Image (cartoon, rainbow, N blue to C red; front, side, top):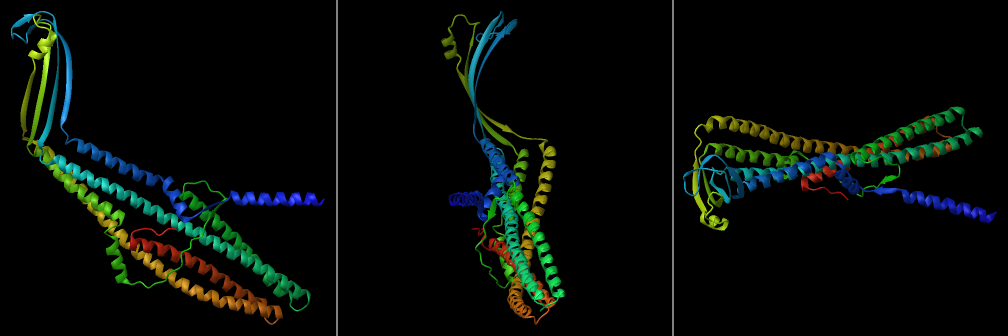
Amino acid sequence: MNNLRKYVLLFSFSMCLSCVSAQTRLTLKECLDIAIKNNLTYRESQIQAEAANVELQRVRSLAYPRIGFGIGQDVRLGRSIDRFTNAYIEELYSTNGFGIDASIALFNGFQIKNQIQQNILLKEAGQKGIEASRNMITINLMQAYLQVLASQELLEVALQQVETSKAQLERITKLVDAGVLGQTEYFQIKSQLANDEFALVTTRNTLKTNRLALFQLMNQTPSNNVRFEPINDEVNIYKTDDNFVNQLYEQSINSFPSVKRAELQLKSFNNLIKATKANVIPSLTLSANYGAFYSTSNKAETYIKQINGTRNGSLSLNLSVPIFGGLQNRPRVAAARVQQQLTENNLNTAKLQLRQAIEQSFQSFDAASERYKVATEQVAINEQNVKAAESRISAGTVNSVEYVLAKVNYDRARSNLVQAKYEVLLQQKILDFYKDGEWRIN
């Protein structure tokens, strides 16, 4: 019997270990890596950057010399001119020939040069677009992750509240049975326990909702076997003012990805307009060709002899002058200028959004810092008040209403402290990013 009991205990222990080992623990950095890997918007920004790079390679190829080789075979009948004698002949004969030709643009109003520079800027803008997408994912995921951590702490607080109320109910029950307290105190504490249990259910559901939001940001199927590691950052309270906001804005505007992307896109339009205007500028092209042919009409010479005898080449310089091209090109230039204005407006919008985001972060940081300091004091004061009320109610010198009020204030203060702490940590990380240009994620 003892051996059987040992086997049962050993089996139960091994099952517990397997359950623990089956749980996956994820850090904030790991969640961010998963979210970036699976995010479709981020992938779209990567594809757009790849497309910009491909377009740059295509435009660069326009500056390369064009070289081609051709070979042909034809059959002629009826009256034609013999290519050897230049006399009219009327017979069925065939010819074949081959040749190589090359051409290069010597001058085209710097059109290709401006197109290359335009696409270099667009390629750089594409890279900044990837960074901007990554930053947006980081902010959203970090907020969701901290909300999960806050919900986990609030759940622990709610569980402690229920356990405390249960313990207090047991003490009150004993005092009521002993005749020290009446039924009123008993039902007051029992009512408080019911309220705490209701708050526990609400907090647990909030945690489930926040976990679902985090899993969705990572594009992962929700799993109860995943645990999220707490962060080790400490709350850092510091004063902010308008000058600090202005300094941070001026510092971040030169490196913030969404602003830099809009700036690069705006610069690219200068080159686009120059390239479009080049359509009405005369162009100069150098071309050359070399070839030979064979004809069956010349029966006196062999194939090799004809090929050697008909070798010929040419070198030409071609000037093309558009005459009425301006009528067609003006609308293109006007359309490019309109797009340039839209891009300039996008740049101003990006700058405005950056400044407003910094101002909002500072406001949220200051407000959360104030709440954190007040909540810290509230927890300390109400904790002592609850302990004093518990001592007095155990001695029968205080009624349950006073104890319930003290406990409610203490529970509310603890919840406020948890929420304020994670709000401070979130805004603290965002402000550090604006200040340093990189995320501090462990």
